[in-house]
Length: 148
Picture (cartoon, rainbow, N blue to C red):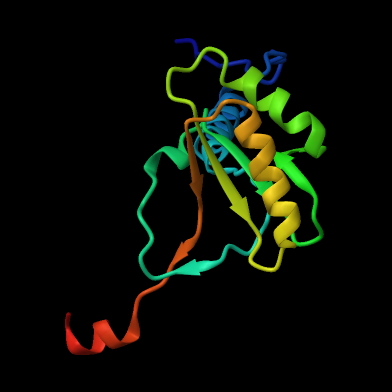
């Protein structure tokens, strides 16, 4: 009778196990796919508050044209800083293939009124049909307490 003996120690396994690496890469891919749409390319401004604001769902769309005016008077088209002279031409180029000529404006509550009006003039010079002024909606405490 012979004894079967396995000679595993004599064989060297030189194959790389890539399964754990693929698992980690898939998890990272899923994380980036979930996080990327949440990233906002918005300029930080403190919006003025309003009690009677109307919800504008189109302002959150990815292809929405958003102009922002910061407290220090800088004007941004999307996340790119523009001058007041270039604002109209760049907006008209962005709205060239769109049927809905609507632009949304985010102006800081403490921004200079003249700078905001200069931006509005630039937007109007682009042939915009609708200009939406974005604000933060606040609840009226008196109506909340009385249930109205």
